[in-house]
Every structure is written in C-alpha cells, then in structure tokens.
Image (tube, rainbow, N blue to C red):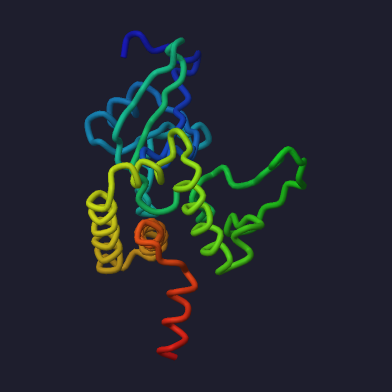
Length: 216
C-alpha cells in the first residue's frame, strides 16, 4: 500500500478486467479506504468522485465483482483488478462499459449509444449466436495466444464439461434468486460454454436447428 502513488485527491485509477476472458469491463477510482475494503471483503469497492462517497460495485444492482487478483503497474499509479463479474458491469445493462466503437477494423465509426448499450452486432438478434459459434470454430482451427477458448480446448473435454456444469449451476442459482440481470449474464456464459462443447464434439448449429425443426 505504501508504494502506491495516489493522486493529489488521494485516488488511484483501477482498470477492472474479466479474469477469464481478459475483457476490460470498466474503469473506476479507489482511495486507500476503498482499496482496503476491497482486500478485506474480496468484492470491489470504489470512491465516487461525483457523490464523494465510498461505494461497492453491485450494492444496488446486485451485479457485484468477485476479486481474483489485484496488480499495480510499474509506476505504482494504476491498478489492474481482475474479477469474476456477476451480471453486467455497465449501468446501461451492457456486459462492459466499453461497447461504443470509435474505430473498428481500421474504419472510423459514428459513435452511437442506445439505452441498453446495444451495438451493431447485438442489434442483429439471434445472428450473434451463429457468429459466436464461428468464432469458436476459428479459435480451434487457428489458435490465438491468450485466448480463453483455446485454453478450454487445450485442457480438454473434462475442463469443458466442468465449466459447463458450473455455468449451468450459476444460471440456476440466479433464477432461484429472481435476479434477471444475473440470469441474462449467466445464460450468455452457459451458451458460450455449450457452444465450445459442440465444437469439441464436431456438432454444428445446423445439427441442433434440424433437431428442433424435427421436434416442431
């Protein structure tokens, strides 16, 4: 704590990252008190510059963050907080606060925001499922360093099944707790891990679609 460099207001920026996917979820500020509270409870606490008060992430929404690791940068003036995110990280309901693209694939985009933090891909509805499946297939065919998907494939079927079981259990718990935001988040996790299993087993989405049509 003594080696950290808090600014003149006694604050230090904290970059919050998903421990499994590496996705940056949000950026907030901590002071010594909120950092100590975070370390003591294992849940992220921050200092609100607008409200001038200590707050715990998820204290009103229920979308809390389970701390897995906290690292200081080389200068000691920024923290990297790796968490297991429970529910959406953004107050808009988006998975991450960083959902508005200014530049994508080298092209400048018009900055747009909707009430739910939807982006262009999400607006296409169920097409995102096909895209997700294709990305998982591509990861298996063209491994990418640092990819969580490749980590699952490397660990093998037992690890994939373990994660699938965990996500199914978390979805059940979220539903039992009547927490819609949690159910949405955990369902997305469940679908992702289910798709990883399908790719590992050589089963396509068309196989699933055809079975559903047969039953219909």
